[in-house]
Length: 480
Ligand code: ADP
Ligand code: MG
Image (tube, rainbow, N blue to C red; front, side, top):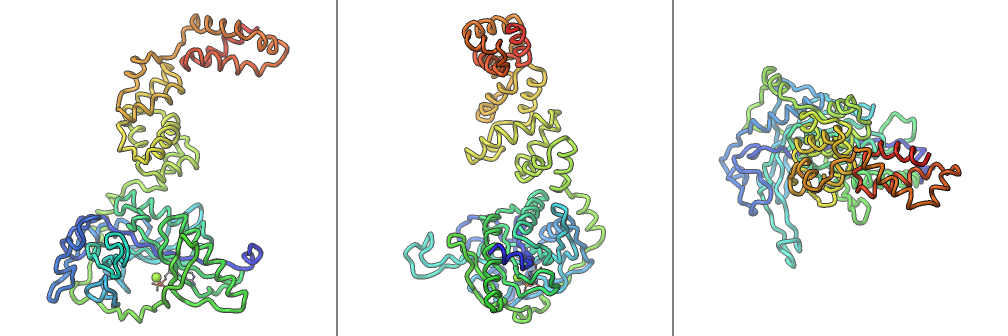
């Protein structure tokens, strides 16, 4: 397959739905909170009763504009809403209110790892309800499906990319950055597993060097970044096989099955005219003044790319900067620690080291622990002042997360402060040397790397409290 891959170029465009974190729905006053009793957030508007009228939620528009600006989009002075007609049991009105030819955001882009990915448009629309199918949780053993309309009418922003990506890796990088952005600007949880962010991947292949794109298949149902990459890889191979056998790829929607690791045809792909789009007569076209856009621009928080650059300017490697930005909770915590004056390098080593490992192990967020930014800063200052060694710091950080105690208190209670008193270290070093005559003669016969062994023994005797620099100097002196 790898040889065949070299013959083809892959073309990928993503359509990403981000669920906007408004309190109420996009055209109705019902709440949007997840996990409520089924069908408890269903006003007559959500249910599509005759005679009801939609009222646009301003906060959804604000979030749409903010996202558009973060994606370098233009925000046209006018946008409008349209009805997209289709029948499905989770869509009570028989149409979805969306935006067709005049979306809220157009002509954007994202620069990702040196490559520009165009963003065609982003438009506001309402989500559908949810079907709970026969035999599923809640109706186990049943032969029927139920509909829960709590999600119906939740605001979505659909972000459509240009077909600019050329590999599954580029698609994943784009998707990850998009998720970072919507999370940092606070418009979406960006949780793929729970479906607050959903991705349809459009994939086609063409002979290398060709200028004409092949027919695309649209893949739905990818619930994680790794699944997105797997689904694209599978789909590329499937399409190459078809073309190599003289067949043609058909335009269709396919579903990714992450357990079976394959895509399956779901339905032929509708064209836009199948939906009989027409302007939503119950909503006025929306005028967005330049002042409104300016006001939102002024509230733009620091974006992930800016954050990475700032961290790198503090001396972090590109890799470390990226890893910490990927974990928003840790990055925001890191920012607080920096504000209280800690050394960035020591702070990042603690956060990405012991702290991240502990959180992963315990499946916690940093805010679930009792560690405050101030307490981490205090710990770091003890290390910088040589009151404790870095190793002791690593030993006590977990306790600080568990019970919120200040480092200075733990150090005092457990007598952990660093031994810089050279007399005390000398005494211990002397004992260690006397206890290991064989190693001493080996050292004297030129096996100088044994110095590390002696240092280790002294550190062990002092439970890691001796100042490593003094230990080295003193041992060299004793060993001659
Ligand atoms: P629809 O809404 O019907 O899915 P769009 O024209 O909005 O269609 O395009 C959807 C996505 O498909 C866009 O992200 C676009 O970049 C991508 N796309 C279009 N043509 C191709 C192609 N030949 N190969 C891969 N992706 C494509
Ligand atoms: Mg589509």
